[in-house]
Length: 168
Image 1 (cartoon, one colour):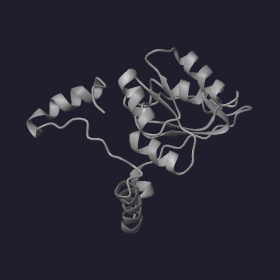
Image 2: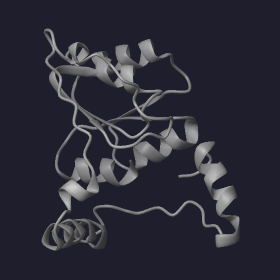
Image 3: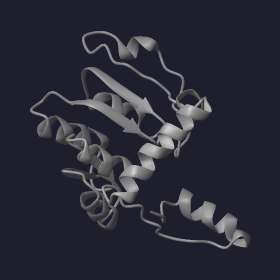
Image 4: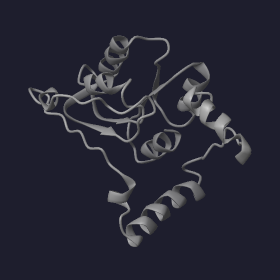
């Protein structure tokens, strides 16, 4: 999220982020989000209402969702007509099976589930993607934060901290 927000702002995009708790909200703002909604402080309905308020009632053209199951409906409800819901993670579990008609109707939403293998399937694609990332990092456009480090013997603790959202 931190990398994506910085890169998106560098490309001139308006970024509305979500984060849990004041510290992560501050980090999201420092990393390029114009607006950050603390999802621990609002209901899903309030989050969607705030997105609509920030977009003049339209909703956003794209949602990048790494959480999955817990945020699926909120993410869809935040989209503008013909919006793109990019599901690239499942921190809370996979998106549950759903009726494709949920995407249709007046909104006509798109729902890709990209994978690294499809976008960097050849050696050339992998090198180009890596070059693009290293270029924005080495130029200072994107800062990579290392919030914590763990010894290999503490891998289980690292996983527990990830699951409990104690990491950045």
